[in-house]
Image (spheres, rainbow over the protein chains, first blue to last red):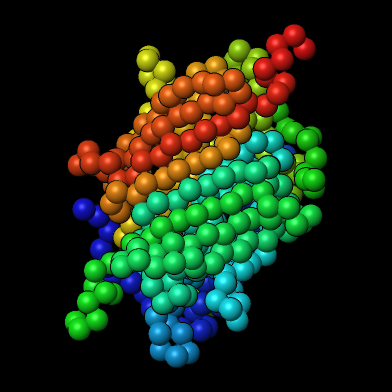
Length: 210
Length: 210
């Protein structure tokens, strides 16, 4: 089904630091590119320079994002994720942590790159961030799964450029189905978007004998 | 509530072409940055060059994305959108068109930047693209609105790197509420994600006397 092979780079600490720095600079460039007042000739000149840097990065290029090898030897792939990934220039990135009681929580600010209605976050971007947080809440409960259903209720517009709070928690488990819920709130503490999701555990995680 | 002012650049044709070219090159750079096999020293050297280009683009920088002035004199803001925007380096971009019967339709391919489960599209990215398409289907029916609810059903994984088809259409209207539905399908024609959404028309579009 997929055209992408499974071969992955496995990054060590010093590589992660350099790549995260590169991703952060590309993220800033993307924001500068959409907000710039440069005239067409200067925009085209900068575009040529960007193309040259892309060519420099072609060395040893993989077909899929890297995994990160943690101190513990565990391989993790959230570092390349489009929501949380410090290695992914497209990710805001949202820094999601786990509280002592197993809830997922993070504070983040969205740049003008994520604008939908004027001055507000694109409704689809809020959905994207919530899917990630709810999936992580399901995973920290010990039962990771693929999203099966995701329901979003938009209570009020979510503002750009100010700190937002995202929270998510595991709700319940029935066989291979796991439910989680969560929300995004603005700096005034009022919830802007609520979400509920159901995830389905892949069969291989259930048959513990294998 | 929002920290973003409303001041916007209004771009003419030649500016749009140069900015879209710049956004396309930054999009390629982002993909190269996550897939590169460059060693830490080279990644850091390229990051420094990227930072210098960001500084060059600081000239006349706005605080919000631009609008595009069309031939007809109409101002449109989809060009900076995180889903469809050719001016937005983070947009894939998805080229959504309207069919003669008023349905929204587009073919698009997602790069490794949008990966969730290995080799598959992040569930939240599918949600983001569907929110945009359903909102556009509601808008072409003559009744644009803000997303109020969005419900997604994931039927099977959506593959990266191959052409995907998205379709959406207006369902019904009840006062200020507008429903739309749609789906994403893989190259084999099978639906991978289905969505239903309800949008609410802002009051100012309803009170036609003002």
